[in-house]
Length: 301
Length: 266
Image 1 (cartoon, rainbow over the protein chains, first blue to last red):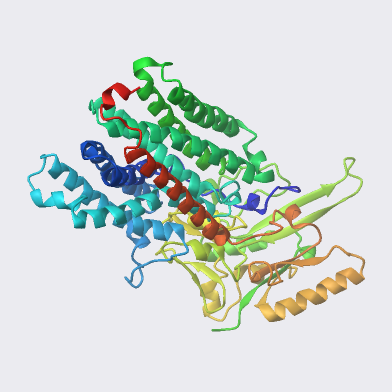
Image 2 (tube, rainbow over the protein chains, first blue to last red; image 1 turned 45 degrees about the vertical axis):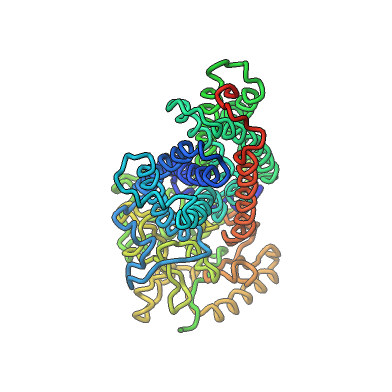
């Protein structure tokens, strides 16, 4: 303890484990799939609507699962509502400077937006006999309004977890300001990948699939740049990754989750017909390992 | 509000008797480790190991000896929550369970805490942990119940050498500064106060007289508030969202995408 690279090395780990890793992944998918669906709704063709629906179909179950995971992770799960309501006074509990407090509110509100979009997509596809629900998606005015707000909330859900880790005093987490940015970008890449996988499974052949595939490639490239920037930004704290976690970060996240998919994006003949599925699966694996490394490595210091 | 109260711990007179640990455990009815089946840590006489949910006082034993053990010294320090004036735990707590009392101390209300553990990551000193009996985050309350009854905290009351002193912060600082001067006059030039200065988190309401670098005692040399990263982290996240949005717009607004997508698929 006589020489430490940062004062953050004197803190205690919170024992955030697998439930939190899973939440970071599933929550990223919930926010990411929603904002991608909104982008497709606004900027895609009319023929891309099934792809946007797919995004909403993923988002809602993921946000429900997120809530369950977060509640289970509490040491007193029956008190989950204390995040929103002050238990002594029954007044709303909100701290704009605490990412966990803001995140709890946004998750709740985003859950409603996600549910509305989910119901609307079901209605549009004819799986739900509720024609009025179709108006809750663009281009209907109320649907446009909901999509804009919901999309912004989706970005927040995807990225606030990284900011939350930054607003601590743990090594790595609080030694870089880039985690939130990385999580937003990673949410976009894993969400695009999951949508591509499910689109492939559903035999969706709309032009939006091509656009989404290309989007995924550019986002993975951006993600790679941000991961490298994050490693540099750690400065002397980077030595906390000179262990098995660092190896997993380089091999699992960077090589398997980013460099290989990028190679497959630009050399589409490498895997032939399995190219799209292969790249998407690798990006998803990399996205999960990224969260695994970030959550666990900082607690092992 | 009453005058701010706290601890001044003079580590030079601590004898490592652990009376403070015992008094704290007894008064606060904290459970023993492993149901009383204690194991030796192998780290000097320190088998408490660290502050956590059931150890709100921890006497640290630092052995500084030469290899041949002909020369050396013990550094002993009774560690506790610092009751920071700018408290990181209180700042991040999403449930409002952590409060500042009328004595300017920081207390976790166990009935409001839901065990999210955000405060554990925020505390720059590693003070807080979950008490497995309650499932809530716990730490020293500076004997809030005793203070309300006009009594002294159990640990300082039990300390036989007055290493742990309780009182108003103003009075404790005066006393501590005199002690530093006395030690320096006696030749102990390394003596200084840790946390008495307002520069450190607005001042620690439990501050220390040390005779070596803070790191030697397991204390951070430069503790900071967790929200230092909030603004920049949020702006950069927004920038990330903007970049993703722009990429999405460029990708989905059909530029370069052929109508017959099937042929274009990989």
